Image (cartoon, rainbow, N blue to C red; front, side, top):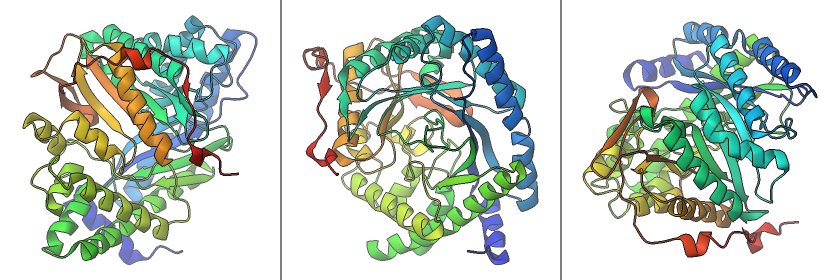
Length: 453
């Protein structure tokens, strides 16, 4: 449908007053034709292809920002899950490739490049095992490279062997980046039901069903939704849902307009608009504040999960009405470190890991940017990932864990990364032993709902 001038003016108002921005325009690039028997040639092909498509990505995004007066917070790149085209590589060779990816990302001026990834819900190829082994070394040797591994799906079940490998990788990554508060773990996501067109890092990758190159956009706008809820006053929940839907409709329209404009400048296809509400540490740009404005005293209070479910449903309904190209994960993110109201709730003792897990059953993604004591055993981390995977598999939704066992940190400490990654208080983790369960290994079979043929 055409974009009306009034819509643009209204969006500019949201930008100036209500913290609205486009969170990311992510350029997806296929690397499936970059393979060569000679690793040096492969590395050169990868570097040249990223520069070919990405050299003007930041410039084009800035041109669109200037044209519409709307900020695009991040300009990023996603690539084919690296284990797919480079299945023949050993761990140390994957690290070499990661360093090339980092160099290319720096050259084109993007903050993150994602897709150092493997998809292993049903099992491993040799290359996928090697990539997983290489993750701690790749993330500690690079600044911009992000990694993700999909360990479970509704169709295939839960690969517990992969979860155990990832728990070990998370622990090793924390150790190797301990001089930076284990920041490597902030660039590493473990998924269930990962999607192929997600524009948000650290979990973005360019799926195998995607075209040669594509432009996906991720919107934001918690501040806009917060102001709309406050302005609505003491209306009942049905009417409050309508307020949220009308607001998200406008945000989605603006996001798609911006994304299509950047894609047009590139001369490439536009993919999807991910309608996820993504918070930042900035004042008034918080999912937690939205939940409080909806009526709960603090995040974690009884009713929090219901409020989040209603918010997420309204976001999805409005997005689907506003665009025929909705994709990605599309919902409300609840990362602790990136949301000041969530941080405050943890520090007050009102928001626990268990309550967060319950909230992930109704929101987008899962346990995100959670910092825990550095001495937390790998088996406990594996248990947390398994729980989150189970929520995703049983409910046929994307869930994920981005958890930071901050090396040398304990309860009462914090990690502070600045910028969008924010700061996170170290959260309490129950010290009950999970090894007897996760140590069995093997697979948790797919649920009955997997049989949909």
